Structure formats: structure tokens, C-alpha cells
Length: 99
Image 1 (cartoon, rainbow, N blue to C red):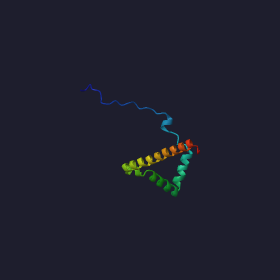
Image 2: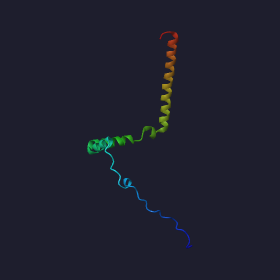
Image 3: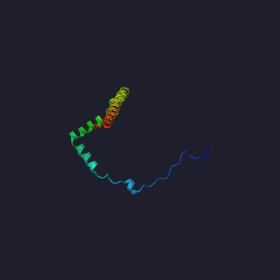
Image 4: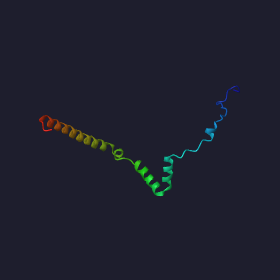
């Protein structure tokens, strides 16, 4: 048992380049400046958080998927029927010479 290798081998330390050890600070882009401006104003910060909460809310279609599917089916069916009937009406008007 004395001649067994250890269960793991330690790797030698790697010297990272200077740019990886001490990276440059992030550039102040327009997005970062705008974000800092919004975070600095309490009313704008509150509006941003309200927008995030509104965006992350659960949608009606997520809460009631079956009902949404049934309603969507009938809405699409009615719209498609109206489009087909309208196309047939225009075709009839063209053939009769009224358009």
C-alpha cells in the first residue's frame, strides 16, 4: 500500500497575466451612465422596480392556459372566416364589374 499514488495530484500554481489579475475598471458607457442616473433618483428607481415587477407578473394565459387556448381558437376562427368571406366578396365584386 505504500507504493500507491495519491488520489489527486496538485497542479503547480499558474501565474496569471497582469490584465487578468488587475483588470481595467468597466468603461462608463451610455447605458451605465443612464443606469446610475436612474438609481440616483428615488422616483425613477421606484418606477424601474415597478416596471420590473409588471414585466415579471404571471400572464392570464399562464394562469388559465385551457381557457386561453379555447378563446384563441375561436378568435382565430372568426378572423379567418371574415378574411375568407371578405376575399370572396371582393372577388364577386370584381367579376360582376362593380370594381
